[in-house]
Length: 435
Image (cartoon, rainbow, N blue to C red; front, side, top):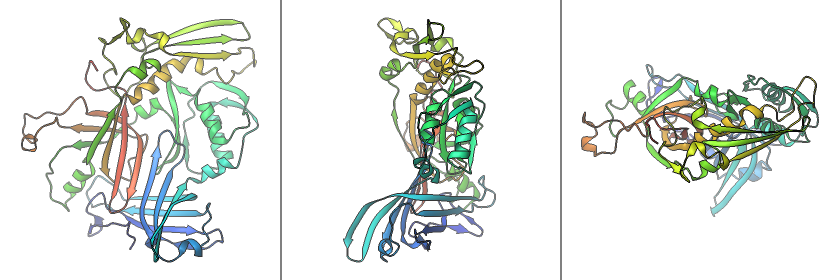
């Protein structure tokens, strides 16, 4: 059994949500040979991020059989991974698995501290990242941004598992300026908006490539509510214990990032848009004010207090703090708009919501969950700071300032002695007033 495979089971199910089993770990050599490398594996780390349109996987290898030389490892080899867990009957989790295909992008951290073993790591990436490096786009385009992104994923990157939100309305027209497919999508992403919210292009272990708006992510149902409390009520091995451990936050850390210094200069609360229509020779200013907009938010409160002032002015009045400049050409096409046109009416609101999302950021550690991914919406509850002796008393209440609803923006999956996850969660305000 692999050093990285951990299972604890009763009957047909694993008794803890940190259990897992590596069913398959196959290395495909450049010579076409398939090699099972489970027994050489020390651990697996896989990262998904809402700002990255690919997955990154790191395999830590203990090579005691001269595998590296025998298989003539040189990079670009395919690796398939099948990881599975069967939960106890009656729990809230279904039978779960990850069936993944990666390609080696780098071999690094090579080390030998004894004659009989060598240690190194494989950095693996999604296949479409290789496809991206092999092609550039040099063609005209026409259509909604969502439709253009879907065309690139289907025709250029050849992605089989992707979900593209095509709700973007404006039809734009232009030419891709000799740019790689993913860079072209990121270029289009700058002007993709849904009711004033930005779009994200990312990949998850569970659902593949995703192109979705912040508004749609906020409107999702809450995936699960997690708790940060110091005691357990059920015995290990029971259904109640499995569900309790699955929802338990093991550790909680935060940089908070609640300062207003950067937010004021980034246009989070007020900003100005300067537009110049080259065809009509007209210039216009448009102002943004946080309080005057109907924003799509994940939190109930505001990311700042109305009592906060700079130069004796409220934060929402500091419109000179951030300036945007857009060139328009209303006569460029008879029936379509140019590349910058969608940003004209929504960029101020969208950028403000993008900035405020980072207002409250935490990193939590959970038992492995095959269903939790980037883009999920979760709730957390934590008791106020107190002694362990007083934690279970009725007088101890929940910390409303820290608890509430968050968006998952990054997940690091670690398969070693156990399957654990380090999850980054963010929101745009707290649940209480006067932040």
